[in-house]
Picture 1: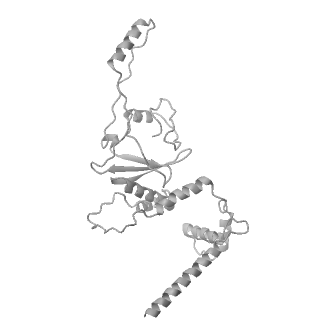
Picture 2: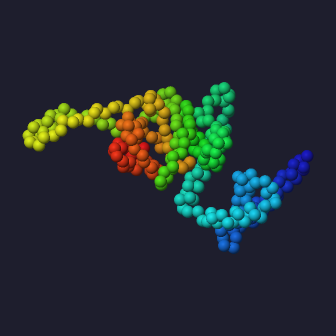
Picture 3: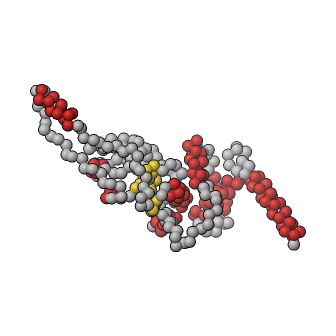
Length: 282
């Protein structure tokens, strides 16, 4: 029995070595140094699986020609595409490698729903991001869950911009676990001394000035209530850093309902409009 196990082990190691050698041979690039036969076969299989082609053996040569004639078949990736690929590759790495005893199913509460299952039903109606991008978004949301104490997470949607796009996540923190907002911009009223000085200057100035005073600013609702009941995170691509959006202000809601603008994909970009929007894209 011991001899039999060792023989099988040697056979498995030899088989793996043969597979690695064959794969390395297939991955050799062509004479122009662009595409290998391995990449070409992968593209053909991807074409067949995506299109659910019937009788692919009968039209295999035609599929191969169509793949070769695709404009992006042998193009070189740009530096930005390579950098984004490296960033998104981190989504597929396991962060928790330590084995932990699984908790009973009754005690496990998953804040993130099965996005792939939900997208399947939208796909039946011709709506969605595609399975590949949806899975990357799911992994990005999973990273968000791992780095924050969240009770509920939902993929709000994707907003297309003129420069970059926004992937938006709608979340709810667990009770008492919400992070502090940090430095918030608080507009304070002018001291009474300053108001008295302004009144004196108005009296000395002979030029009449209007008595109009802008209406008092409506305070924003507290986190977890009203329009700020949910918290939103945004990123440009799955795998990039999630950015927490600030609470919404009533003045921003009023102005946003009166204007139409294209998003740029840059959170710091100013919103130039009339009436003037009180803030940037965040």
